[in-house]
Image 1 (spheres, rainbow, N blue to C red):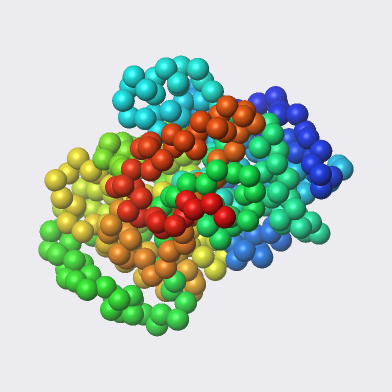
Image 2 (cartoon, rainbow, N blue to C red):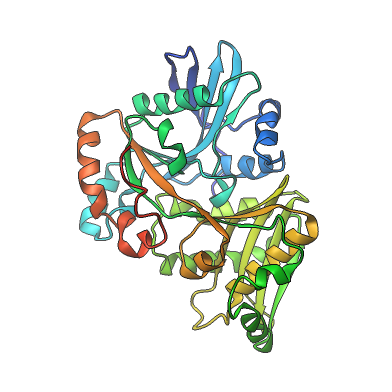
Length: 385
């Protein structure tokens, strides 16, 4: 497993029209820097509990992917920051045939991935953090301008509602983000009543020797082999190939073992054998899913997925959580069980005019736009404003 990188090489700071200066480096945020942004978390209904997740992911590194922190300064004052990944082998996420992706990936052309939808999904999702006294839109605009002028390629996953932030970007549809709003629910029966046959699936799971274990805090390292198996078999069956897929196991290992009482894990068992997990972080009034996977080598998991999701709702109701955020919707079961979804899109930037001309023409024909994936998105999400 790769160790922390403290890469002091930075993308040179640029002075945006707003007067902000930006840097991009592999140096994780310090505790002092994190504290600058706590008002930003409070305003979003989140909490400082997310910092341990982001700090863990900031130290992820493989030969192909490294974490990066984009910082924004107003003079010497830190005004903003965002966590993203720098990927140097991303072509396989676009092209399945080796003859297409291997020559491109051999060039090690860097691409930056910033997931702005929500907090902590895949360990890295963050909308960007803004210090008190600074305009959020102005700081985020400075970040995007920096990436636009200094990065060969950048993909930003953002909500369709935020399209106005992405002036000049090429826009493509993506899967929706899913959540269950628990505010207003009196008991788990209110949630079960929204879904036909869900009560029956709970009974079916129990009759097949199924049970759910809930664990608070960091997992013991002895649990990690099971989580690795879940991740590997899920990736093999996934409808999407992530450009930072080589980091998945490190992200799962580092975040699952964080020393935080705000971590909550739900593990599914069949006849005593672990078959899947969902891991969340309690962030203020919300519960944020970091990652989850199942042993897809099994012929059946007897509705373990639905049972894990029900237990997370039951936990949220007992804890007074107002909403549970499950991240991108990538399967039909998850889509059906959400009470609300947020349309998302992919926004592409490049400082190279040839790449800016080519990518919009070929991207609609890549595996990132395959119909099996787009079935979980908004058909209008890719329309240009």
